[in-house]
Length: 477
Ligand code: 6PG
Image (cartoon, rainbow, N blue to C red; front, top):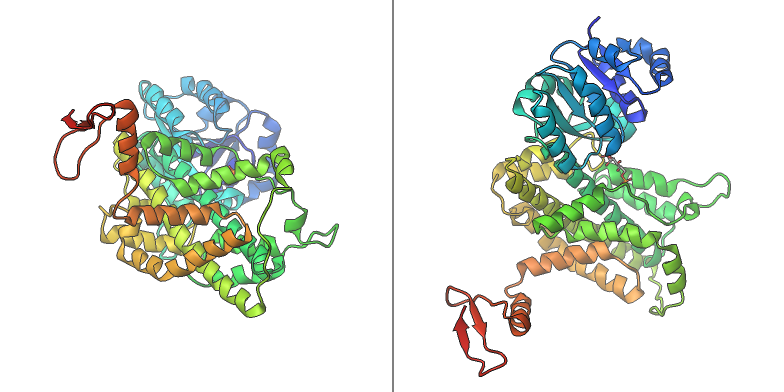
């Protein structure tokens, strides 16, 4: 029997992806470093489709029809390189290695280049949707050569999530590292979405005085409107969950220190390199890191805060509606920043990424899936050269309608001493972008003063320097 696709690395993501291929009628070769996992998979799920269990790398490669499609689902970093080194010598020109892990796009670019010399296609592929997505249909972001997409694309389309209009949530994102870059930004946006939701929760709790169960109901209501999304949906689930051992809200028995595996941090690091202001995503990463500094937080507990003021029932209800506005407006800003980073990465690396196509494949399957993404797709479809999501008329109008409430929420947060860095960063970005004049002119003056770094003038071309230490006359630089 020859298998149309092979999956090596059968931890939960790899196993579920292999099952997804098999359930869609493909013969799937499966392989794992320790063969017990392979045997377990076939024993447990063999009835779901056609699996070929391979014990060795040689057997695995031999089981695959040509061009070989070999999916590796191992930890990003060194383990991925180790698996590539193991399999690449066994492959032939035209074969492809599909890396479905959360690899750094720079690693993907290097691996693609190295394998290309051998005639092997390396397809760095972002896969989002967690365990359930891998099994029932993830959002898939393949990079690599256009050529490799021809024999691979139809299979990915089959196993991917489908958007509401039936479109498969997969597209050839662009060459070499484009797929993993887009997955990285997806995760950065995921961090921002989660942070904004967290701030909304905290404000409803500490300013409105609501219980987790009540806040869960509010999120359920929001989920029927424009915020309709997977993350809002699971937020309601988590908030309404009660800890069996203590009878307390689950959210109150979990240690409040958020962990991370690195993709959000990468999004910010790369944004800094590209010079793209992703302040909302950065605040989300920093908020996780701040939460983890237990000793620093402990040492800061006694610091002064404002006197708390309780809202009455009617005020609380008004406030809750305002938080929805603030959350929505801040979300628009996060996506604006994320898409800016994708556009910048695409320009830097010559990927020619279609932003409308990216928003289309995020409509289903992935962690940030949301009704909202269809509106982003529409914005880019209407104007593929949109300079920023904020310049889309619909989004601009929605923010215009939300901004008064957005500001009021930040006033309340500030007055009550509740940190809302995501909301605040988003509003600052919005206000800075729309400002007629920025204090950057003063910054330039200071730079010129202490370092003769020169400045440009609003009324004449060229670079200038003022003789600050002398008669303060201006010289052309
Ligand atoms: C996805 C997720 C996934 C990621 C988790 C955890 O798209 O399915 O992004 O790839 O592993 O979100 O990330 P952190 O551990 O960094 O929170």
